[in-house]
Length: 112
Length: 491
Image (cartoon, rainbow over all chains, first blue to last red; front, side, top):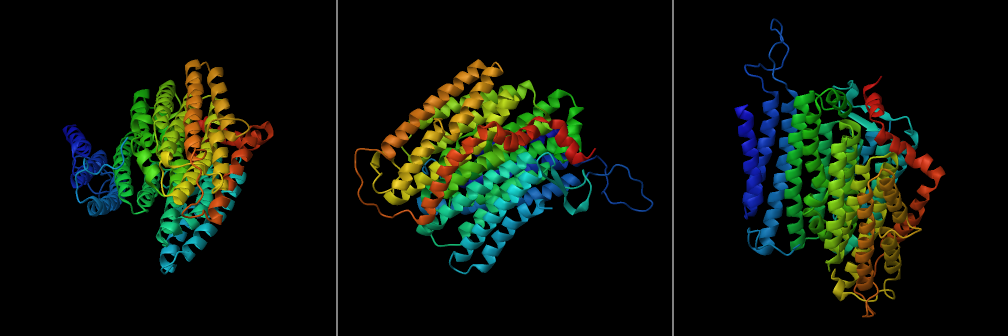
């Protein structure tokens, strides 16, 4: 249980960072933290204490296996997040070229 | 088996465009338009084939629930037709409009990826697969919003990407929780397992997904990204985003999850009604105060999404018909209005309503079609918007939601109000404009005229014969939860 709570706190730290930070790079990092927390969440659901790898072997009984499906999901979602993070960094670079700053309070052509 | 081709073909087109085109965009245009025409044919065939007889495709030949299923039923077919019709007109418009910005094939490759993502979301019957396709569509959308290479476009795209990532993360957590409860990711199977769980499980999962997909649909408290992204994007992309993306990723997924998977209950109804009411009133009031043409249209999109949400919240057969009808109508008239705005922006070089004037002489097609779009969106007969709004209001009164009906009426009047402003300053101002920088191309004019004609043609759907033929199977799919489970899982 304590693991889940810690994981949830990690998610909230990420969300807090996205909402309160003013630096583009810090926002991107906070998003990454949030996404890590989500991935960790999925892995935790599949984890079993003392569980073993889910491969059938002769002479070994099928007990206490870790669920492999969420791990496959997490691999996919890591790839997606890599893409999104790269996209965000590219946008941040272009924003820096246009505005000469990373501070979002100074990047405000769109109001309302 | 046409289902996989609906996803493979635009994906293939995207990669072929990247491979074959050299510097120009000729191959991009050819491939994109050919793919879109084929896709319209395929989705119409799919829609006709699946009336009461849905197609299920098991990827890799595995059996449900060990595989990713692709499901083509009437609802999916209906959404596919909307997506591809709007996409074809947006592409026709793009050829002239995007050449005005840059001559690159990249636009068409990204456009095809956007189509792939939306097709995947609409067709898939698997929760995680839905997430993956949603990300493909969003990724293309982020890039396309920033396509024009102006500072405010990067700003809008960054904002959109951050908000989109937050909602995607929430959806991923929701998928994790759903999997931990049900041990399956196939939507139909999830529905079977959740029916045996206590109601609070459904409500918690539903809450997470409502926030996640509510952000994608831009319902009112989650709307902050929409006015920026939709007003900064190039015009055909605005019309794709406002016309179909928020519906394919937001409204369609909410309909599928709430009605076919979780089962509709009074709590969902109240949430939908609340979000819808807030969206209609607040977004209309914000729209009135806008002086940026495309921003006004973007706020109008939020308020029209509110109409769809209250109709879903009422939840009777007639209200669902109204909601789906409004999805179709909004896609058509908002697509048209954004194309009009793009044409004005290209000709005058500004989006500020104060700097516009009497455009009837220099832009006759744009002025005429924008009037048709305005009449449709404000709900005046005989255009399509009138019928869908009347159906929603009648359904609300029939089901006893009198205050909701009142909100819808007030919302319609406010819509008329801010579109009067749009017309008065945008097209019928005092200053007569004699000469313009660029003339809209043939493709642009053709796309606007076709959409304007569609505004009239789709109002035929209220005639009972057409309604029974076209809309009734779609409504049946939404209402009949047991049917959906049976058709995917087998008897």
